Image 1 (cartoon, helix red, strand yellow):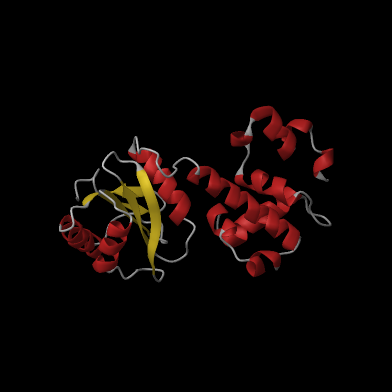
Image 2 (cartoon, rainbow, N blue to C red):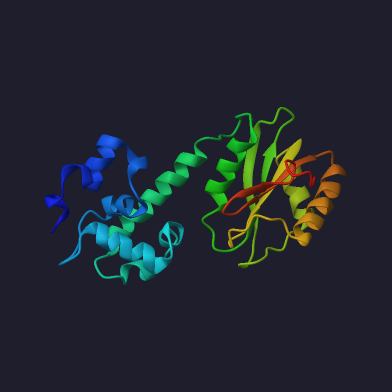
Length: 223
């Protein structure tokens, strides 16, 4: 039976319009972007198969064009729809923090950093530069590494901070494994950067690790 023959309150698009997007399952949301199924399979069926094959929504949306398009019932047009949906969500999160805007609470900062860093399959180290009033000056990705680590050079962090005339800085990096717990090397590197930045009067106010959840060094007493 095709989706068009389903009861109205069970069809993903109608369900979204009547009950809101939060009422839909992951498979139903993906099905809206797939739009159509294939012989013997509805868009919801294909969405469920994709989620099962990739191991979840995040892994699916981070899949390559080749890995997704090789699945039955999915072509480049459907991949483009999914990719566009992911980018829209990312830009929506990024729009919550703009240059010159004051950071009013840590959740705002975490959402912004998650939108920028959580999609990477390798470690990325970045800095969020602020003025004396906690207003954003710039966000810069400084180092890209492997699945488990990124080499960080204090001289480059300090140099970038001076270039942006920053008074304060928030460090950030992602853990592709999803585990946001800081490693011993994370803690040692943070203290080293704190000392190096202090030499040029730049205050390190936090280091946030982006994973399945997010860890703030300042909130956990590690800074």
